[in-house]
Image (cartoon, rainbow, N blue to C red; front, side, top):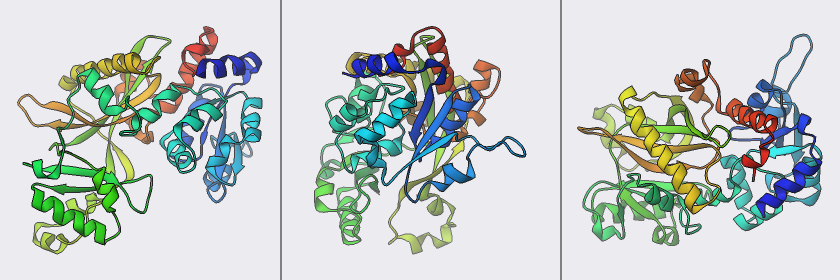
Length: 380
């Protein structure tokens, strides 16, 4: 079905006026900047009350000096309205290639299932639209854990039940109040698990039903690093776009509390909500292992969900203590990363001779595919 969308759209698209489009959140500015850097147009789809960043603060202006990166804004009442037939027609009229980000999935999933998203988005996706659902745990047989297993990538051990806990674990469950977030807590015994769960249920963070579907897994100790890769179907090569680590509330606050005050935090629930990212390099001696992981993941995705990964994806890892040190993958992102700071690590410059952001790398791939008449290889 996705190949039909691509063929139908490209038959009428103005290939000299291709427009990269994403919804106004997460990494939309990154996509807009990258499109302009490579001579493509861009369009940001915004929701009412969230348009100022794109329509005002970062809008393209020429007088008295050129500035800004957002060419055009399409404002909707809500992000989920993007599936309306009239909105899809507007996007097709602009020769749009859609770049899905995490916010696209999050906001549309509050109103639509993945089947509807895949079926009713008539514009071509840059990347594999079928892999969007694989990022969710348990959404389908081909989820991120199936991909990691097929790729032979080490990931934290899973516990089938709380009574099996015999070391430090992290519990991941759907958040009771924020449907697209997860609630986390740590425990090192069945007793600690039950005490923490009862406290979170009482606080309204968890529900008993959510706890039933929670994943309990080994808490890998070590610094975290996101390996932000880019697989190019045009070049048939895997690249490391950059590396970063997360800033999370209120976890960073816990880390900053002096030991003398830690007793006061015993009743405070730890939160791990995304707050931003920080550029973080890894040792050069670990790069070969990182690339091997990435290449195995690309191969696994091609086997389980053809045509596999196209463009950006990330393996979110912990560097576990050695010797030898080892990368343990605890999460996977199957679309553009949320960190615009990956270009401030040196890896893209080592490859391209200058810093290349993920947004620009997407635009570079589109331009290379267009100019070699291979757009069908990077779109679904």
